[in-house]
Length: 81
Image (cartoon, rainbow, N blue to C red):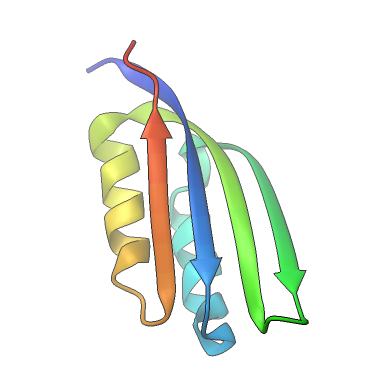
């Protein structure tokens, strides 16, 4: 299966969910090329952006698992090639 490059945006609205998000990201560390996390204390949220390089199935598995965590929103955009 072909690998794709993509970006994943994660917004953690319930900070007690951050540990679950980090543990899931650790599980998928092999497809994460870069990560930037910003705690936005004034709004009580955290924003994480990822650069990923993996198959569609790998990226979907990661975003699907993260999307099931309470208080977390995730969106992704992938290259077509």
